[in-house]
Image (cartoon, rainbow, N blue to C red):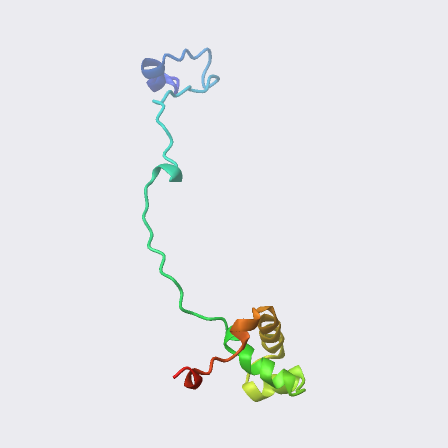
Length: 108
């Protein structure tokens, strides 16, 4: 008895010798469901986190104007020298009107 006997009726394979022909299974073609067909909804909330170098930019700029090196500023503020340099670069990239501290007491 040939092991392909079960496939003869379903697919119509003729065996010319024991196990020489590989069964050719036929399946129905179905569309492949890709990720683009799946609808998904996401809520993206705005982040309130301000990077560390932006928080320290004003203070670092003030201390740099006094002539302090980056290492001393970093030690006094408790941050790394790299964050200190990035904060100073960020402060230099700001427009002039945002660098000035607003004095609200003169408005009244």
